[in-house]
Structures are given as structure tokens and as C-alpha cells.
Image 1 (cartoon, helix red, strand yellow):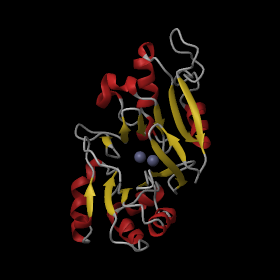
Image 2: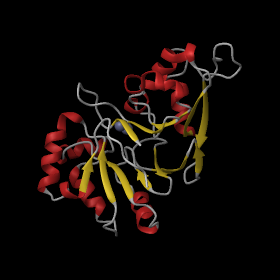
Image 3: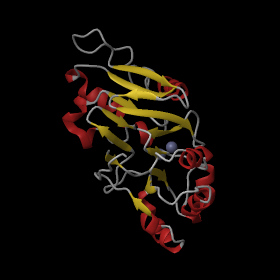
Length: 252
Ligand SMILES: [Zn+2]
Ligand SMILES: [Zn+2]
């Protein structure tokens, strides 16, 4: 998995959520254009965890940028709730054209084909097996179990499913989980349904294993130093790897 964007805010030094599984498939569309360039044309599947702007922003713009060179449609996978939000609020012919109704140049297929995902079903998407599960971040949001090896929470807030999966299925060896704000921002974190170092520490009490590699993502970049300091103070820093843009993580 190549991380095209590891962060919860866009700055000169941080890109928004995008996790390239292989050249055909990506989770979230926060940073597809600048990171992929013409390799965007190799993409076939975009899997969305939820409809928040930082996870979808490059989807409408990339389709527009590459439209005339696209040889095949882009398959967009998300829960039905998320698809409805995108159709109603982005691809509505007001904010942006409805590319799910616009055929590719000289082709019969439309530029985007939406596919709805059901929680807890397992899907083969490209070369990967993905099982979406509900988290407690926002309407229709989900995390994924990837290839029965990694739990990828996306923006999650408190979520017992994460710990259930990891406690019950010993094949799972990796966890990618968000920490967005320092604990001093607890009220904002709770209101916006995100984790802080202390909320993560509380959540980890439910984990009954010590053989899980834990990766942290979606840090709001303005607070990265404060979050790292805090992780050190509470003794979590040694236990986790903080993900960065352009880093690769082998799944499994
Ligand atoms: Zn986010
Ligand atoms: Zn979000």
C-alpha cells in the first residue's frame, strides 16, 4: 500500500487521505492528481470510506482533468448513504457535472460507475478483498478489513468493531487508526467524531493482543508536534508508527 496522503489536513507538507493499494485500486481520493499524475489513468477502482471533503476532493477534479484520456470508467465503491451524498451534493450538475451519466469520449460506458457496499459483506475489488464495517464517524462511514490482514479504521471515533475484529481473528496483524487532534482538543474531537491520543489509549484497553502493528494516520498537520509529544508522554509513541506521505506499507 502506497500512502499518497496520510494526513487530516492539507498543507505545504501534508496531503489528504489516499491509500493506493496497487496501481488499479485506491482507498479515498484526497490526493490523486498531484501524487499519481498520468498514472491516474491506470486506476480502475476508488473505494471511499466516507463523503467528507478531505477524502473525496480529488474525485470530481480528477475525472474532469483526465476525462478525455480515460479509456475505461472509474468504479467508485462506497456505502449507499455515501453514494447518495455524493450524487446529491457534488455530482448534481450544480456543483459539478454528474459524471455517472456522462459517457466517455467515443465509448458507451459512463465516466463513473457507482457500486454500493453493504457493511460486513466481503468484496473482491481489483486484487484485494475488502470488508466494510460501520464506524462511528459520520453518516454512512466505514472502515475496512483488507485482505484479512489489516484493519483500516479511516476516521472512526470510538468503535468496538475494530477491537472485536482484532481480538477474534488472529490473521489480522495490522491496524491503521486515526489520531486527529491533541487531547487538549477533546471537545472538538468528540464533536467531530475523531480520536485524540488519550481517546486512543482508552480504546486500546479493549485490545487483548500485543502482536498488532499499529499505524497512526489522519493527524491534523498543524498539531503533529503536539500529538507526538503527547504520545511520548503517555507511553504510546514506542508502540505505534506514524504514517507519512509517500511511505509504503506491506499489507499482511
Ligand atoms: Zn478525514
Ligand atoms: Zn471524516
